[in-house]
View 1 (cartoon, rainbow, N blue to C red):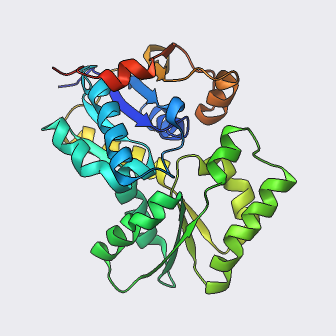
View 2 (view 1 turned 60 degrees about the vertical axis):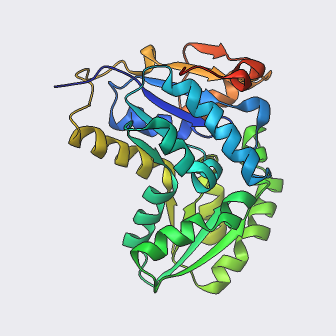
Length: 279
């Protein structure tokens, strides 16, 4: 048996396209319906109530698109609102990016010291710490808020002197502590992989939660016998919705996805807020 329905993915902006990229790399025949809430980016500085409300609206829209799986590709929404989203989906397989990244880090730490970098909301939620301690309570976890990283990526400041200086300011403390791996706790951060690795050195492993989320999605769909029977062309059939069509969105989106983004559509924010898609 196979299932040709798409996989739904949402994020506060374009960062979740790194998850979409890994899904298409591992499962090139899968179609994706992506929602980037660019009009309200970033979620990281918002209150818990606001984040949960936004995530619920995003999920409501995607569930109405007859998806076979829902992926919360926003670390902030995964950390704060994943349970509420799961309740909305009922039996729909729903995963976030926190647990896959946490599991990968636990398997790879030798010194049992793990660093987490992410938005203020993600770090303050301690969702990664809890997920890691649920697996092994003896591992030490050190969180570091890096609020400027995501806006830098959205602006295309991937490899600049300013970005490197900010990375040094954020990350040198984690290096001094003696961690041996860092979880990239925001889907924007894989685009800063070279800058981050250059800052912390090659001794420290970087855990890309986008890749491990895509791998978990593949494992779940395979277990449930829901993989598409197509072997390729998933991207050409995918649809990408944005709540704000910013002037440089095509160029930025291409940098996240790794290739040209097809079928980009505008979903007006007032229509998303109005909701009622699944009723």
